[in-house]
Figure 1 (cartoon, one colour):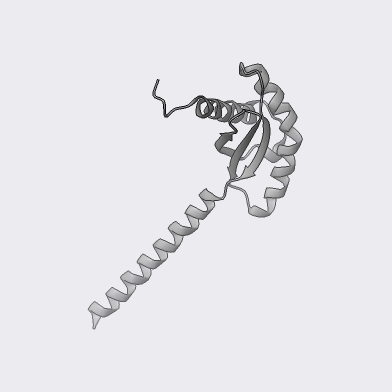
Figure 2 (cartoon, rainbow, N blue to C red):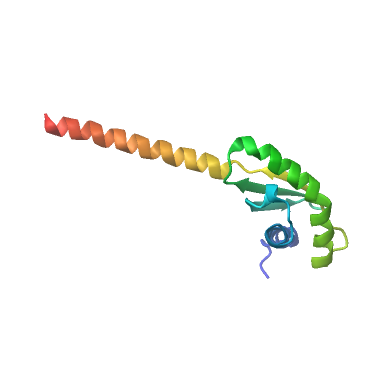
Length: 127
């Protein structure tokens, strides 16, 4: 196995897969059905895990999603302990990932700039 794919990266990847499955199939709370786990970062001692998530709902509804995730944190950690063979299951810390939203805004700005540039060149060629 290559050295650059460390154990903590493998554990983070496995936690991401298991959490996505648990959220999709096990949790009944409607507040957190529309989220996607984008990444997981585990500390070196495996005691804490930052779980980055994104959602397609409006940002004003993000407060409800955070409350739902905080409410389900114990259930998720308990089920992780049953699914994964770890001596220590990390504490979960959920963090909203704005990178998808930021990428969408940047893409929209680029499209607008291209459209404006094409409109300017179109008017220049009409003269």
